[in-house]
Length: 500
Image (spheres, helix red, strand yellow):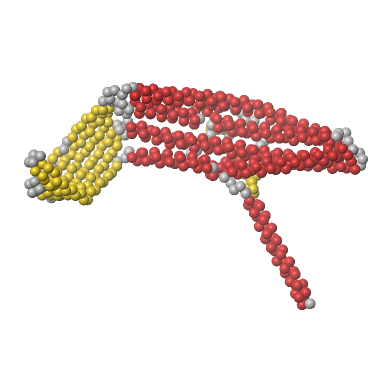
């Protein structure tokens, strides 16, 4: 009896605890659903992809690498400071002296350091250096039994200048600048391509959402039609064959609905993969698909595309590289020379502070020529090959220009055609909706079979889908025109390319 009373007393308490647990669990599940579901606009999707896309990450790394290579080359053109120190160098050898016809042992100990400052000369591809060599020598010769201990210092200015050849320093610097520019262009093209891919996937996802809504509306209409048919059959106003057809139409509509749910889930996975999102995240897209005619100037689109398309600049850079290669090929067996000048002062003494007590000037002048005589036609053959490659790149440039013009023209024609298609599709949807509503009333009144009503329902769904497809195709063609001409006719402004 006591246990029963205790249970009765504890029952309200246990019920309160259970209710509290259920509330906490319910709030937690609601919170997870709210946090997990994400509605994305097109611009938000593009921004996410630009941050997480593997291709964009690689493109940015390539851009960074080329920038640092150019920075390194520019740094190499500044003054270079160098210090070489040899604190200990010992050498002992025995040689035969032909003049005196006897063997001699020589022992030599050195300690020296070289300090130099070298400045490349970009304008002439030469270099000028200031060099100081300081050392200490302890030398013993067995021949005269003499040991010499001296300090020495050699300070001199040296100029080295190639002549009758091309400037290799300028050429290398220009190539690295072109590499960086090409990396910037490639990154910009990747961003535009990514925007195009994301937009295509975004609208594909939207199409699947829209198709699911259309299929859902059709299913609801089929349920209404089925209820009407069922009531009429039960009232002996229709034959059972009509009910069988209504059941078939309802089952077919349900199958279409379920099929569209599968297609939507597949499109969602593809979209999340492209954006780099968690595949378990629940997302949907929000889009303003209202049709607004954009005024497109064909001449302006072509002119802007030919002036700003980055692929044309890449073709131009390919021509420049071919010209560089032509210069290198020409120099393989060229007549060239070099001039070396140096002027310095040398001094030596047993005491380090007095090395310049009796200084000596050490001038040096050297002129060297490299004169090719016969190469069996190697240089001419290589020049012909390099010229052929240059001409190929020029042809590619012309082909690229023509492709840009043709591409813009095709898009312009498609836009004009789509404008007409959208107007027709909008009218078709209105007519199909009115037709379905009229025939639904006829069906309710027994003047139409379920097979005929299903045909009008399918027609309405088809026209709704055709309108959505036409609107999306128009949006995509506007984006294609933006990519082809680098001019945004929706915002009526040039496309500003940013390299992050």
